[in-house]
Image 1 (cartoon, rainbow, N blue to C red):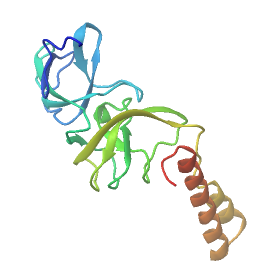
Image 2 (image 1 turned 45 degrees about the vertical axis):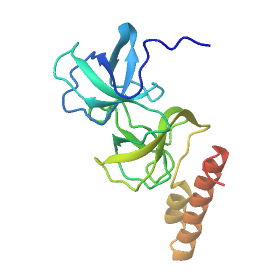
Image 3 (image 1 turned 90 degrees about the vertical axis):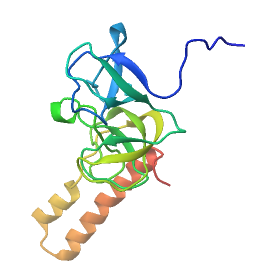
Length: 187
């Protein structure tokens, strides 16, 4: 039988690598030295949510681990719907570090690559809301870059009929659906 001494369930405390006051509800990662910090890449394993951020570097910060039996709230970037797969918002934008965004909604990332997903939205949400999620940590991937609007733009340039614009918009929707199906996100 494995030794499970000195383990705990629920909130845990880690020293911080940066000032995290006012960052409650954001995802954090464990870094070298057993410290926590906001993610710096879309692939960072943000497996904890700040419950009680502190002002000083090195201060003990209380965090909630992600596990599927316990819903959590994470601050959202952009809008989305219940059932959307969530991923890190752009950690290259300081104000978005630790936030999540929809991977499957209208503001889904369009850059090819791998993204860390902490889980699925359990409610519709708006920008800045602490959205309720069901944790299901995993990596999701966009196989190739997606350029939306190209058919619509071409139709607007070459044709002036509303029917041509409608057909171009349908072509974009077919492209979006094909990409989401390839990722296993829709049937």
